[in-house]
Image (cartoon, rainbow, N blue to C red; front, side):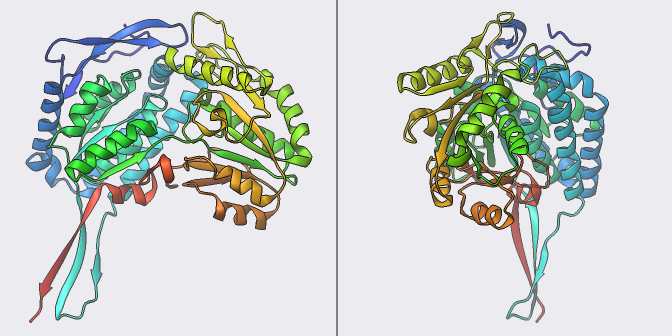
Length: 486
């Protein structure tokens, strides 16, 4: 069983406001990545279970109380969700740490805090969801109104289960939609816990449904279900292509935040101390399992070797270990397959003659999936290690000789989710930010996120935006009403 102080329904599906086993009784194991040990099992949904969840969401949208709830009332309920998250912060942080392997301090400071902020922010937007009047050439009153899309399929990944669920459920519920949420099969626990809190906050039965299970079965059934009106997906670019194809066949709107491989540019005039802190945060945050992480460091040649020397001294001092210890900064990878992927990329770098500045190997600790933060230099830009998304605590470092070359290198991968610039030259900061092909650009820091700031990708990093009023707009459809005054 889950080793925390709270009780939740032991791994059942949440459908129509009720806890239930999978129709065929199937269950799947949940593993603690810090020890490689099974901690509990959860229901493994079949296509029949997904159908039941979609039907419950459809009924709640078409004829249930959510259909007639005002934006103000939805906002009050979402504020109550935020309050309950804060009241249960310790339990939620324990659960997220156990499930994902995140350091407990990170779960408190980032995951729980941001999840509460998400619901609170979209609660405020729910109070002001409105349309506009339009001047026309007719003798008519013309106005627009925003309406909910309908039933939303929310499919979330393993790395930030709590936050990325809130970034979808928050705007979806604020706009008046109903939701079927399928969390990652590896990290389902906080989704089940949040189902309980949402119900306690006053979300009516059937408005939020949670189906745990695999992508090929539960995920595919949800994508293909004709009762789903919109798909919201966060995950890998490869799966994103499949999701987009399924949505296109059914002519359903879809928003997707996909893979990333962000460049972090350090110019020679940067504040070195501040830059090094941002660089390390950018690639070790969440053990590098962060689609908006900064795994590619581009450094002006005059300070290239100096910065490598500083990283060689500083990175091995980053505390790696048991995520339950408050001093831990880097925990384990979320699973064995993720650890093997990192090992394969570092082995490829060695084969290509790269310089391993520090790290480059597993950390043997309690049977968990740990990998030492690793810095790699002297790789060609066309190396797969540079061009592909590693999704682990690995940083590649490349020199550049001009601003134009820095921008060219930054934009040279298929991805475009995030990027960063370190400089004390304000004009350069804005000039380079305008040229970077990315959905968000951070200047002189990394991972400054807030529900008011939209983020999302270009190129192979997806389309649509999470957060901000832009996210709420993605969960609504515009209707125009024109009244003749003749």
